[in-house]
Length: 499
Image (cartoon, rainbow, N blue to C red; front, top):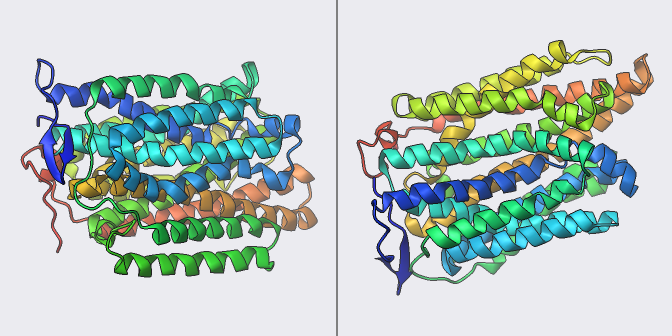
């Protein structure tokens, strides 16, 4: 279906200036690589520092308890402010937001690469998260407007959705290469040219798009969402030092209370930060929940896979990145097959089947040993994980935005990204606490020294990650009711079964 970029004036949609010869649809396809590049960058940044952490920690003198915040600071701020970022892109202009956020992300990355103190590095990661919270929903909202429906939309969203898994997996490989052969600082510097390329492409090819109607911000909702999510993640992060401390359960309880208040406020305010209609429609709810849980397994689980490869098996950073490459390759192949068959299968089948493969991968990893081998302990799990992620990420972006009013495109885009990033933040915090407790317990009961204790901790993390992954399957089976015609191009508008 021909794409049409829209802008609003007085709350009414108006067409932009005529497209170049060749049809307006070509604008969407030419812009897609630049929009996808931005998505690739923000997801890449969630994992690119993983393999750099051991070396980065030594060079900067970061403690074990602070180390995880180099990853968590980005994911937490990214997720906490995504809803606000989605509304800013809707009201201020999605193209304008995209361009501003791309420039800001490049600047924050430069600051991170030049950091000399741990607080400077963690601050730069948080700043990256703020600009990522603007960039990601703007990119997905622009894609939504560029491909309003039909078969072209399904194909474009399949490509865009698979970028999430590819970006997270590619971050591991690129981070390992840069850390070993250049410097861990280039894990930050590499974002500068990527951001500039995406900025220039969207500047030239994409028209402005805004939401109509009221443009008032829900500041109480912003504060409650940010504080609630931040408190929740901080509480889980402190659980690494024991679940009984007030710094753990106190912040977790406060986070839950603040998020309950957030929902209550959103039900009452005139212009909510998160219109509940966006999150409560059953198909979109399935996408948001799946994104949350998959983010915990992907971001949190991959972190401990990397720790096992480097700390226990003794892989150098780049070798560890190469070791993770099969997952990326399998993910790309699986995503392509899933996208091609989405019109025939619909969203339910891949969404329910993918988590089974993810859980199987994590269960395989529970068998890791201090003297294990890559071929036996890791490779089969990485292949299974690639299959699972490819099946999950393809329908996720499609489901999250099917049936969304154009005025809510930014906030719906933000919510699917926020779900993944907050899931990743909680996954890292929770899995770190589980690993610390299991390692401490094993150190007093397990013969074999520190590596054996560490391996026991990692094994427990993989068991919990398997449990998280498998929960996605019943959610997909129970909630997804979307008509396959929405992916086949036989219907111009999304058609959803609500029964």
